[in-house]
Length: 191
Image 1 (cartoon, rainbow, N blue to C red):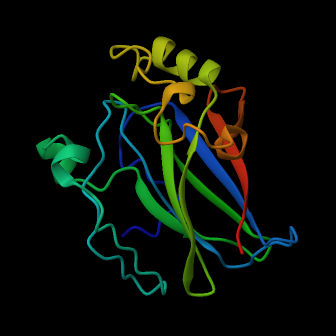
Image 2: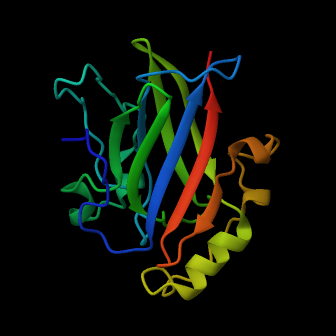
């Protein structure tokens, strides 16, 4: 099932908690919003996307834009997995928490987390969030699950997908916990 708090599915990497606060245009919390996320593994591949998500939650995601061979690298493990994909329903205060690992990178893109927010039965936002260069460099050069690939080849400043956008609005805030795990958070306004 894709309705799950922990999306790591056994992949090893830097433990990371993603915290979202969904608010309306007046900064009031949006209760019961659903956030779906998906992102690349430490080796830079996505798992195979669900064709449909229907588990009684009332959410039915569709990823018809997923190019399976590009995104999975045609890796058999990626094609047979659903790691680093999932969704959660927010609480009455607009808060959503999803646990996983820090995303990997692939050539030509900065590290990012895709997300879709669905509120009141309709998709409100489909976008992606990025990370500060100091964080990605530290993770990709020092953490054992990522360091064999080294630092990403495309920082935020030269990523063609986010170039020209207000990067501050797309960048996670973060804090490293005493045990080394990360907490990354973002307030997202919809409506």
